[in-house]
Each structure stands twice: as structure tokens, then as C-alpha cells.
Length: 595
Image (cartoon, rainbow, N blue to C red; front, side, top):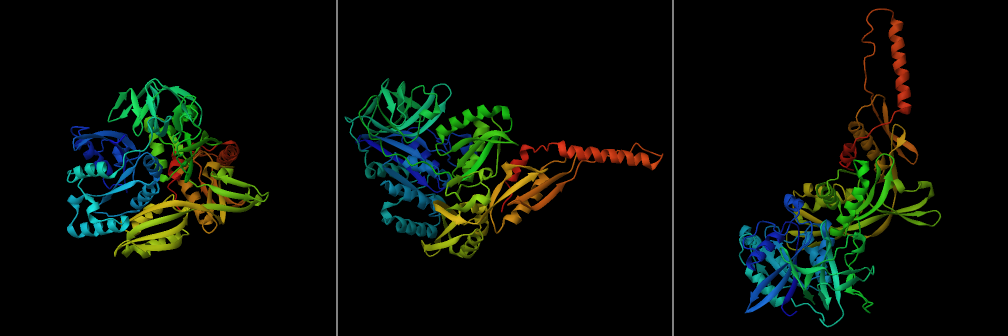
């Protein structure tokens, strides 16, 4: 145990975490020559150039004639994947805080640092991309890091992960500064599950870190929460390939394959114990993720619902932060109402379902969860507008608020304040990190930032701003439900909740957008928006027309009138009996309607 070091790499997005991990793997001879983003094994990660999943890998490093085992976890940098970071931090004693020399400290740098300090991790600051940095910016960023961490200049390791400059010093500092894991090898087994993955041939692969005791191959084990028993058919360490072993001891990180097929039996954050063990205490439980954005997912081919259900179960093994529950819609059939950590998280889940499981899906309008107080003194949590009770029965509605932290240059303060006020924000603080960098804190309703806030923030600051947000609670708000009627039929999948000040304007926008998205039919289609039972906006889609009197040349005019009357009668009947077919592309393009 004395020769084990468990650490993770944390940083803001695109500060060079994955590149640094590549160099560490090369220096420890784990790989001979690394390809870029070696640990990012998902196709989506390589395409987008971001880390989506935390990736664990074991390295061996020789320091002063001793061989040390270094367990590294490379973490995501985007705010939507902060749950991955918190799970990784729970399995480590130290963290490398990577800061881009050209961009300096950004919002997720501060957020991830706070997570690490709350878990009592030893922080090693790393200033990256020194090969791209000029001397003025270099000294300015060093001062910012010293201010943030209250450390000395000599504590900061200056590197270029791309070229390998200074990277060896990081390995020496990991050995010297990060403490070995604590635990008792002779105590009863306690191992925390920090991740899992579905393998179609071997069942569920469980990734764990042992706090006390040891695990032997073939040993009978048990999950603390579910009580489910299983055998450790295969155990081993997580190098670039899984390396089977006969025994894994205290402080080490590894995997178990036991042939478990049912995804509900494996819970991330649960504790693995020996079968019939007398331990009644589990390792500190990982906090459950709190979904921030809600949306419904339906298969385009309704016959593939069961296949989608199984795919969602398998995906949840690899991404414990997704929440889903069955739901049905008259227009879209059976699907799932899902909770996501943010808009990017929702996009990634959609892409993974389509790529990894080959299922084409429809995603409905994103929304948030509201707390509804009824006149019968009941409190309902409503995350789907279609489940919202009649406003006549509602005493008050509370919506979720978040505290938004924006880091930017001082030149853009005015633009940011104007944007946040338009989004119903309340400014609570303003802090200067240095003479030109400032942090602005706002309290804003979550519904105002989930769609286009980030895009607009980048526009008003010319890209020189980063933001992070944290949930702070529910507050009373004046909301209205916009119900969409197509051909006098309610389409609950297109219902939306909006603040009273802008609900009528939004209703008009929705009707206009839908009139261009829904194709023409053989009859006129009215599109209406209703608020509290009152129609506030309307658009018409004109019917497809055919010249029925084209064949009537010559003769009496009554002949033409007879044909036109017959057509009019048929159109009227068709409008009553005809069904409007809404293509799946309508729901996808509907997401582009922004307040």
C-alpha cells in the first residue's frame, strides 16, 4: 500500500488533461508511442475533442529504485459532466489541477478545485501549454494561480503536455506529495463501486477501489445495498487492457466480471462486501446526481420501445447521472421521460443511443422540474408540462434557481450584466481575481439558461467568458402553461411552461414556427396556442389544392359550381375526420425555438 498513489486530473474543458495523460502513459512506458486522446475511447469523444467519461488506468513508475503503482483517472472538464468528476475524486487522494497558460483560470477550474478540496485531496497545480504562452501572460497566470491556491511559485509545475517539457517532474511530485491510500488489509472487505460498463459477452463489468481487506478470484461477494450475491469470476487491474490477477488488495483500483446481466443490481456508489459479512456500515455514499434538464425520448419506430428500454438500462450502467421513467403520448407513443445534467449531456445521450444501439429517436422540448403547491395543500414535483395540474387548482408554483458564476475580462462586465438581467437574473457579487479578470455571480432561474444562455454569453463577450452553475433551491414564480392545439387536438408533447411576461410572445413564435414545420395536408390545419383556456395565437396551414374544374371546358357554369361545391363538402368532412401527421423532424426542429 505504501507504493500506491491514486490521483485524478481535473481542469476546465480544453486545458490539456487528455494530452497530459498521454504523456504520462508514455513516460511510464505503459505505451510506447501514444496516439492523441488515447484514454478517450469513445467515438463521440474523439469527434468533439472533449472527454465525456472518466477513464481509469494503472501505470508503474520507478522512483529512487522503488516501483510505484500510479492509478490515474482522467476526468471530463465540461460543467454537464461534473458528476463524473465527483465520482473520480471520491476514489483518489490527490489531484493534478491543470491550467491552460493561454486562457488562465476559468469557471470550471474553480468549480473542480472546490470539489477536490471538499474531499481533502492534495492539489498539485500544473501550468500547461507553456510553449504557446508569452512571458507577460505567463507571469500573470502564475500570479492568479498563487492567489487562488495560496501557494508559492515553486509549487507550480510548468509543462507543455504536447511536447513533453516538464512532465517527468509531475510524476516525481505525485510520488512525493500525494499520500498513499489508508486502510487495513486484515479488516473485513469494503470496496466502493465508482463505475460500471455493460459487456455483451461477459455481462456487467464493475470498477471499484478497495478501502479495506482484499478480493480473491472466485471469492463469493455481496452488494451492501441490494444484498445480491455473486462470484468474482475474473478480477484484475485497469491498464490500457484489463490485466487479470488472482488478488487485489487495500488501496488498489480494479475490475470484477461476475456474469451479472441485470443492470438494476449494480449501483454506482454501492459497497462490495464479503458474503455473510457482519459489517453493517458502508463506505461514504456518493451523492446522487440532480437532473437539471428534463426531456422525453421516443423511438421513431414505436415497435422498438422494448429495445430502447434495454438500451437505456445499459447506458445507465456507464452513466449513472441519467434518470428516466416510462411515459406515453397520444402523438408519439411510448417512450421515456428523462433527466439530464445539462443540454450537452442531453445531446451526448441522444448521440450515444443512436450510434451505440442503432435506435433513431425523437427528443422533445427541454424543460426543468417545478414545485407545485395545490389548494389542497399538496406539493407536486412536475418535470413534464403535460402533467401540470389545472392552474385553477394551483396555489403557487416554485421554479428551480441556480447560482451562475461567470469568469471574464473586465471589458465585458456591462454586456454580461445586461444579458443576465434579461434572463431574470439577480446580481449577488462581483470579485476581481486580478487587475483584468473578474468573477460575476448571479442568481438566475434554471429555465432561462438551459437553451441559449451559453451561446449568447459567448456572443456578448466575443468568446472571452466561461460559466458554471450550481442549484440553490426553489423560488416562487409567475408561470403560465402554453398548450398547443393542432387541428383542435391538444399535442401535450409540445406543451411548454413560460414566465407570464413573455408567454404570449412565445406562443406566437411557436405557432409561426410550427406552421412552417408541418407539411400541407388535403385540408386546412389550424395551429393554436392556448393559455388558461384562452386562445392567444393562431396560424393556418393552407390545404393542398387541386384544380378540379380543369377538365370542365365549355358547357354551363353550373357544372363547375357543382364540382366546386362537392370538393368543398369533401374538404369539410376531411377536416373533421382527417388526422394530421406530424413528422419526427418537427419535434427535432422545434428545439430550435428560443425565447
